[in-house]
Length: 280
Ligand code: HEC
Ligand code: HEC
Image 1 (tube, rainbow, N blue to C red):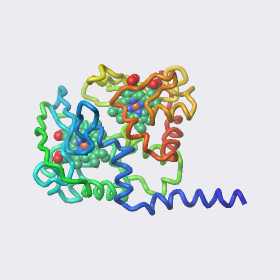
Image 2 (cartoon, rainbow, N blue to C red; image 1 turned 30 degrees about the vertical axis):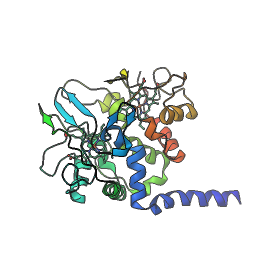
Image 3 (cartoon, protein in one colour; image 1 turned 90 degrees about the vertical axis):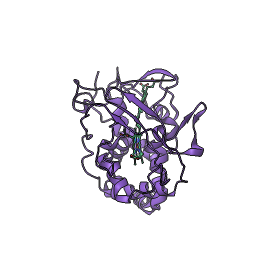
């Protein structure tokens, strides 16, 4: 009989994901895996201000641009209340505003092309359900053109039928969580992140109130990466921000949000991370 329940469970898992209402699916993606709050929710002295969730947040004043994460609540004056569903989807997947110009690549649109149509609908439904918050953020200043980079594998949307395959599901989740944006170093100037040669190798620095944190090597290398960590240790790092040697991870690693992912999703992510070629 055990095999019979095993088959039932295997059939039930993808069916459940599909049966989830679009709004609930969108809430799960936005609030956990995709860490939208990490950038779009205002930061107060005591952390993110969830009573004004997604009403505009961090400012990135960097060499090629000075941009602030937008107000993405349905407020008509200061948020995206006047945007059509199609306009929101275009901003998410192609990184362009209705006026036509490209968003600064801080917004991880280069990773969102892989989103399934169902997940895109869910994200839009959830954004529309948020309380409208009036909060005008400063407009963007673009100092130099920046190349728009699409993450390899995120060129087109994945099929929902692939969610039943653990490795493909893991790749999907790691992509939309934009793990590799932070964990891949830049190539030669002007070429963007070096996904081809240094995927997951770490090294990017993130200055902030916490000092400077450096994204780590999360490839399968046993010496430099997480190849000799157990699944439990990797899960603890992703969801609790505690590394193998028990020290605490600093921001902007979004474990606060990843903590609420389902076990099944975290395990799929780990299975995929184990397949990353080792980089020393
Ligand atoms: C790493 C930080 C970061 C994350 C994570 C992030 N965004 Fe953004 N987003 C930005 C920034 C910065 C901008 C503004 C860029 C600019 O002005 O060029 C932006 C712009 C946008 C816009 C355009 C709005 C407008 O008024 O122009 C939308 C829509 C959006 N983000 C939605 C989302 C959603 C939904 C998520 C999660 C699925 C998300 N973002 C995750 C940083 C982020
Ligand atoms: C916004 C940038 C950012 C994103 C997105 C991000 N990380 Fe991180 N991550 C970091 C930084 C920075 C550190 C190191 C923090 C420190 O040393 O205190 C880190 C540390 C880690 C560690 C600990 C490794 C070690 O050797 O200590 C693991 C594992 C990890 N990240 C996995 C992931 C996974 C998986 C994802 C996607 C689900 C992800 N990260 C998304 C920035 C990020």
